[in-house]
Image (cartoon, rainbow, N blue to C red; front, top):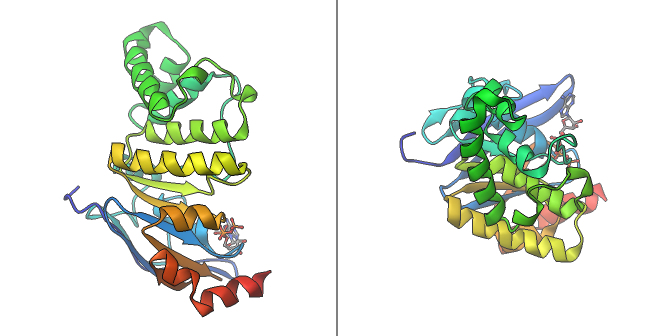
Length: 256
Ligand code: ATP
């Protein structure tokens, strides 16, 4: 990178058949900041993540991160530019324990090697040791060390979601895209999650985009909030300003 760890979307558009999921969306997220991305269901939030991570190619527009044009890059390359995401639904491997699931987050470094290491094949023993140690440190930074040997099936949703966060961190990202990390969590877990995200940003020097329906979390965490509605950027600014924006209020009421 060039040391300008800023995410910049310029006029990004993508359609699926007749659905214009993103319409000329522009957005800048400065290094080290948290940008909340909100909007009614179907607004295009997940699609935006899919465009940044190379799952989809925008029909038009540019996406730059850390001075690199991501728009035409394959997913694999984008991960190498230290972009990671979590997903709306938890997807841990039940046949692996927690720490092995976290280790798999390093798969971009050497897919076959890491997978084999996680599965304890002898010729990858040294690599396994290093990865295991790194995964243990990350679990520690999330307060999850005691779950290292647990089965994902025995975790509460709140813990499983934090394990997913740990797995994303295992790829050593600088840009972290979080897709509804608070969904399904109880109130106390949401508060903890807020603390955790704040701590991780400091510790790993992260730039964060947070898609979230939980308004209290977004408004307390985000430096700036962008509002999408029907694929368009409706508003952008500091949380308090966005919250009181009549166009934003109307968009939410209109979708209720
Ligand atoms: P939610 O808050 O419900 O998760 P969202 O803001 O993340 O919604 P998206 O999932 O990005 O919204 O969807 C935006 C629009 O694009 C929706 O109308 C959706 O049906 C459509 N869409 C997204 N991906 C595809 C796809 N692969 N094929 C067809 N349509 C899609």
